[in-house]
Amino acid sequence: MKRIPTIADMKAACRQATRSGKTLGFVPTMGALHEGHLSLVRAAKARCDVTAVSIFVNPLQFAPTEDLDKYPRPLERDAGMLEQLGVDLLFLPTVDEMHPPGAQTHVQVNELSTKLDGASRPGHFRGVATVVTKLFEIVRPDCAFFGQKDAAQVAVLRKLVNDLDMDVEIVVCPIVREEDGLAMSSRNIYLTPEQRQQSLVLHRALMRVQTLADQGERSAARLIEVGMQVIAEEPAARLDYFAVVDPNTLDPVADVTHGSLVAVAAYFGTTRLIDNILLT
Ligand code: PAF
Image (cartoon, rainbow, N blue to C red; front, side, top):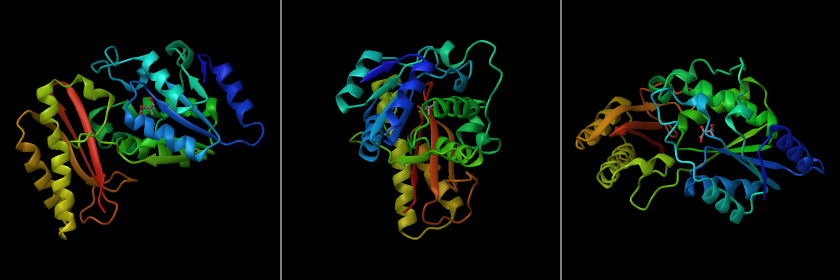
């Protein structure tokens, strides 16, 4: 695995890798890798000839009050895991390399960026869209792999790629969960053992909603009511949103259909966790 810190070298390595017609799969990450990320890497390796991963904690997507400084950065551990999986190229740019002082250009997917997580994290998706646009231009992958856990991010990035006619296929991989149901996230390590137990309420609420939908309940309002009741049973959970939306537009739906997105975000202490299901 080649470790590459500069944009110029990463461009050269990616162009070289695809010169003979090989396909390039790309997994952008912020590091602190867990099984969720590794599942994306495995999917990329299964689908493409060459696999590139980036680790870059992108300051543009953090608000000043958020956890940029304390975000975990276990670089050697991450690199070891990627090496073992057989990743070919690991892009490790610095902040100055990606966002040099004086840069003025941002990419914003207007409406979608204000919904779900975008509503509670203003500017977050502008930061994500900007860095992902830059990464796509540097790597020029055939396919890029993202986790379904970040459902709103997926909607924003699909729209970005479509609106800007980018030649990259967005591949979305299922949420990977701990045995007890908690969706894997780099932020889970912030949880105290007590909060770790409390956080299970998110999965419980989603499962209750799925069961009700399986039993024929079609009213999104009723599903939201029940989901919120389950969350309320855990007083330590501070709910941010519980929503039933169209997964592409992120607009609320009145009646659920196959594929409606049920999404939840809540704080446990200062840690904000998200989770979702696509109704079957
Ligand atoms: O999902 C993430 O880890 C980040 O938002 C991404 C896509 C790597 C952009 O910084």
